[in-house]
Length: 326
Image (cartoon, rainbow, N blue to C red; front, side, top):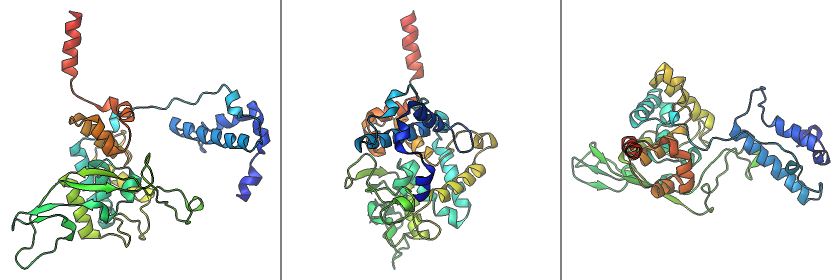
């Protein structure tokens, strides 16, 4: 904070439109001199505007000077690039590649599974707790039904080795985004919050397929959970860091994909698994209202963002257009 005070201009100097334009132009450039992403510029511009609005509230300046500058931020793409969307076979291959990288990498295999099979945000998956999960199954040897496979132990009459996994359920209650230790109330790098776009105590229930039930049950068997019930932890037992799972994801892409696919946008980021999940559900015919509920945002946002990723019906539409043309 002391450095910021010495390195920053007085607020009153921002009352000049010329100075504000210089600041806005600087938001468009990264530290290495390359153009910043349009979404980054938009986010920083909003932060800058709100800061000046607070200065107006404190009566340090008369009005927000950004309103007096004819400056337009770069357009932000509203829809997902369909090239980032992987199909189920590609995702399965990538998850196997993560697992094959060794025991430390395998600790995040189920984490990536949560992003794809449950459409979770990375910050939601990082905060997933044992008590949030119902992982049911059926023993094919003895015929016993289990409400929670992670609690199943071999008995005197059956080892329960042949398990049929069934549809389970997750009750999402919070997220754990990285904010930096300087900006959290408890000094930790990750801050536990409520779900995005929801009240703090509100939850979201997501039904999960047998494949994810299997991944989560295997994770409990092979790696356990933390003292607080969290599935996924960092190298030293703390919150799972983006740098950790990003590193394993990059290695998995190099191992599972072809050279041309690695250089393409195909699931370049772990977050793209969530996009793949939404695209899969929509193309499978799941109603947009249900897809939006599972993803945790509105129907209007869903259709705007994923409109380019919905396949099917082209021949029918072409026939209708052809008939109209005569």
